Each structure stands twice: as structure tokens, then as C-alpha cells.
Amino acid sequence: MKNDISIVLSGEAGQGIKTVELLIIRALKNSGYNVFSTTELMSRVRGGNNTTEIRVSNKKVQAFVDRIDILIVLSKNAISRIENRLIKDSIIIGQNSVIEEKYKNGGYKIKDVDMGSLAKEVGGIIYSNAIVYGLIAGIFNIDLNLIKEYITNHFSTKGKIIIENNISAVIKGYEKGNELNLEIQIKKDDKAKNQIILSGTESIGIGALAGGCDFITAYPMSPSTGVIHFLAKHSEEYGVVVEQAEDEISAINMIQGAWYAGARAMTTTSGGGFALMEEGISNAAITEVPIVIHLAQRPAPSTGLPTRTEQGDLNLALYAGHGEFPRIIFAPGNFTDGICLTQKAFNLADKYQVPVIILTDQFYIDSYQSIKSIDFSDFEVENYITKTDKDYKRYKITEDGISPRGIPMHGDGFVRFDSHEHDESGFITEDFDIRKKMVDKRLKKLESYSKESIDAEIIGSKNYKTLIVGWGSTYGVIKEVIQELNDDDLAFAYFKQVYPLPNNTKEILSKAKKLIIIENNATSQFGQLIKRYTGMEFTKRILKYNGMPFSIEEIIEKLNGIK
Image (cartoon, rainbow, N blue to C red):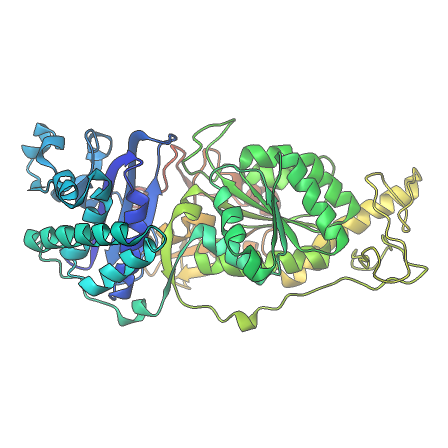
């Protein structure tokens, strides 16, 4: 097995697959391999069937593949749901009794490893995940001392006996992995060692810290909850006030109060929670209070598939709130952009006094990948608060639509805040002429923002005839497809800013003879948005909405069908 290997762990919720994932991807990376991992979960605390895919490669990887090279089976019924992903050369590793006969007779390479019995030799079935960790490390012949070090650090708070038993379990698994002699020949990449492993969740949290976030509040809702957990974990170190709100309505109103008082605040939620925030978003729009919202999408309507992925909430973000008002929407596709765009969101919210929404999804949030280190000295927390005078007008009409933003007790002026239409000083008004001027003033902010709008990025041939359009989390899979096909007539337009449409949108689309859009939704929401503002039609739409991300294989197959 060379160049690129897909390892899938399949078992029940509660068997510690996540622990194995976190430990092994770091060990592989520090051994010089490029890694990417993603998880797909059933919506239950225990039982069911969950899988984690870990890709190990000689080049940078950041996408899901259907192909399973090595399947590690941890429980009964762990194969049937994913059997269509097995290939003729797939290696299935697991206890003989949990592998059904049809797979033993299916031409696959079966490796009988009784991980449960090995764990019991150490002290109990609870150590099975350490056996699996050691097994994978042994398959790749990772330095055993490195593996022991990670185990010691991971269980450092559990006591000496737990650490020692886990190390014993890892050694047993490691020896079994070596015995399998799978002859993996992936060339190592020295650059990989110097990179850092991040999850999508961490990228948003780090970006918020870099943006000066000092207050976050949210009501828990998967898959967004990890962001508030991350900031809570680092709250003392970075001076962040963390508050779990009683509901999403409270959360959106609390961050408005925080920004009004001079803080830099964010809330994180998913579609159902965001729906509850709509009135608050409109309130922020008319009061011109900056807000930053992280919206992690999942399949809907209603509860939908709460632990799966979909790009189904773009329209929700676009049109949320009653009335007409400006907003900015980012959709990072890789974790470097996740950090940079989230950091930028705070500065833009502060500068333009508008809602800034960061759109991710379950696939983005729950995946791990390695990225180059970022020089945070390049980031600047831009503060646009004005010291007020006695004649201060909070909603002063200006040429660019941006009024000077004061905060209470910073200067001599009175900072009014009201949800009704108001005049320049913030007093309620029903004057028709003032109403029109205020609407125009607020809408003018988008025109002002266009000067620093983020262009779509072209990946692939600059002389393309066919252009693939993607946004957000489809970035990784489309980029890998472009690299694999290596077609001089093909390119990928990556949109990390989805609203307002980047200034170069029509220019790059007009160059193509054939336009293809790829989206994880049923109605091509971004394609509709592009058509609305440019009048341009797509030749083909490749859409997926079963709760799973796109795989490299299926996009290549669909593209070949279009040619």
C-alpha cells in the first residue's frame, strides 16, 4: 500500500473511537505523515454504529474518500452499513467472532485480532481503545516511545495505575500491529512534522481569540457546541467571559449588550438555534450594534439529522430577520481560512456595525487536518469605538453609512439604543423622510464594504474552459479532485465569502464555457444566489443531501459523466 491509505474505525458510541483518533493522528503527523480525519456519528450516546476515517498520505489531504483500505472492526454489525465502501484489496482487522461469514468469504483479507481479550489481559475491556491505538501505531511502525509519551500526557490526571495499564495495552496492540506485516510504503514528508493538527472547532475558537473575543454565550446545540467549550477551556488564559445561556434568544441579546458596552462578543449555534435568534439579529441591525455569529449547519428541517452534515442554511443566514439590512457571511473551507476569517469577522463587525455570520457545518467542525503554523503577529484587533462629545449623534448620517460608535461612559455623550426607527440622535421617530434616510444609510454599508471584499480564489488552470464553483467545506474535496485530474481546461473557484458576492464573481464566471456548481444541499442555494445577482446559469449542478460529505470518487465520477 503506497502514497495514500484510508483507515476506518467502526464501532459503537462509547467505545473510545474519538480517543484513538485524537492520539493516532498526532502520532502519525509527528512521524512525518500527512493526515486528515473525519467522523460520522449516529445521534445517540451509546450503541448504534459510528465510524472515523483517517487518511494517511505522502501529500496534503483534506477530503473524505469512499475507499476503505484498512477497516478496524470494534463491534458486531460494524461492517454492513459501510460494506459498499470496501474494495477487493480491503483489509479487515478485528475479532473473528464479530466479522460476519459473508465478509470472510468475500475475498477480503481478514486479520483476526481479538482486541477485547488483549485488553482483558491488561485489566479490562476499558483498555480496548488503547489496544487499537497501539495496533495502528504498530502497523505504521511509529516510535514506541512517542506513543507512550502521548498516552502518559493524555491520561495524566487519571493516576499512575491507569497510565501504566494503558501503556501495557498500547504495547500489546503495537506488537500485534507489527505482526500483521502490512507492508505500508507511504513516503514520509518532513514538512508534515512542523505543521499543527487542528479540528474545525478549534479553528473557529482560535480565530475568535485572535479577533479579540472577550465574551461568548451560547445554548448547546450540535455541532456548534465545541466552540464554546474551546473558549471556556482557554477563558482564564485569554480573559474571556463564558456564559451558557438559557436559550438562543438570550444568547443573541446578551452579545448585543456586550458589544453595546464595549466588549467583542460572539455566539455559536446551529440552524434551529439560529432561527430563534432572528428577532435579535434584526434588533442588532436597526440599533447598529456589531454582532458575530458562528452558524454550524446540519441537515434540517427541524431536528433533521443532528449529527450529520449539510450546507442547507445559506438561505437562512441570507434572509434571517425581518426587514432589509446589510450583513456579511463567510464560509471557510479550510482551517487556516477558518482562523483568518473568524478573526476578520470581529474587525468587520466592529467597523461596519453589522451582523457578521461565519458558516460552517458538521463535516468542517468535526474533522481534523494539519495546517502550517500561523504568524499571529500579522493579526490586529481593530477597535472603532469613538470617544463621544456632548453633541454626539449615535446614528449620524455619513457618506459611507457608518456612524461613529460610542459606548457608555467613554466620553461626554449619551449613547442611545432603541429598537424603533430613530433619528440621528437615537430618538424614536415616525418621520417618513428620516425613515428613508436611515434605511439608505444602513444599506450603504455594503457598498462601503465592497472596497475590502474577499475575492473568490481560483485553484487549477488559469486558462480554464470548465469552472467548478464551491463554497465552504467542499473546498478540500474539490481541490483534491482538481489536483488528481490535472486537466488544463479545468479550475475551481473557491468562495470563502458568500455574501455579498465577491467583486470578481462575474469576471471569473464569464471566462468559462461550462459552469458546474457543487453543493451539499438539495436546491443549490449558492447557485441561486449567484444567478440572482449575476444572471448567470450553471451548466450542471452536483448536489448531495443525504447527510454525508462528498467523496473524491463520487465527484470524479460525476464530472466524467458531464464531459
